[in-house]
Image (tube, rainbow over all chains, first blue to last red; front, side, top):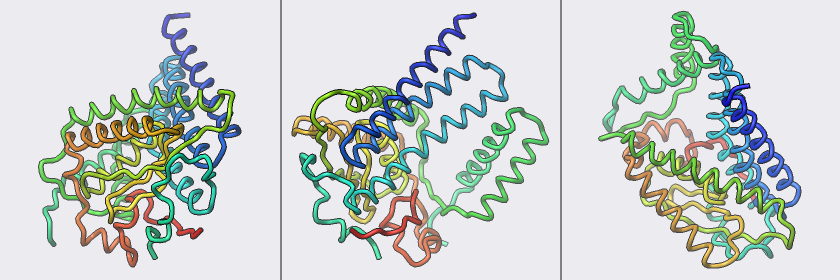
Length: 115
Length: 200
């Protein structure tokens, strides 16, 4: 077992822990908008850590490039998903107003929706 | 045809799609490369993207700085959200904050949405290109100090993106209007021109 194997294994475990925290967040956070935070940040970072760790463990080029693509597309697409879900959630009442300290969007969703 | 159309963005698109194709195969061979170029050209012909004009272009070093900043912020905010998810106590309070985009470049707005969702504890809920404004949901911003901190982070991010020359890349308007067929393309961020409208 080389040093690279150890680093790779540690990264995979760290990534898995972040993904676990994201899963717990999906259950425990109070409303849809808060849950989208758990679905974007720890989930993305966790996946990237797992991908990097796996790449260090595998070290054979064909699989590693595939992993690079997996990580890159996750980084690019997760925010788009979060934005779309968050946008629909706000408009369809998926937010708890009593937990909002400040809401700049209050009373203007009608105006901003085109068509 | 108004606006300067450089061949470079198209070349970059073909190069990028070809790269993805070769990476998917995992090994480099001339057959993969040629196949990738054919697939890239077919994809770009079948699903044309809006033309882009760019004067001066992007600064790679500035972009690298943004990437490094985002990577660091992603690590920090992941641990933060992970902790906010598992910590005991009452439900967490948040805020929805309006963020003004300093320029009406589509790429700047898209990248801001992208970066804001990955980094400082925020998810972009609503975006209006016509008003140059984004609305971000900031997790854990239960007081004015947290809001001020968030605004400083956003200002830094936007300034870094502008310094990287992102705001100088623009969609050539006539083509964008044609692609969006019927709807005002400026009412939606570039990534989701097909968002179904849901009314409360």
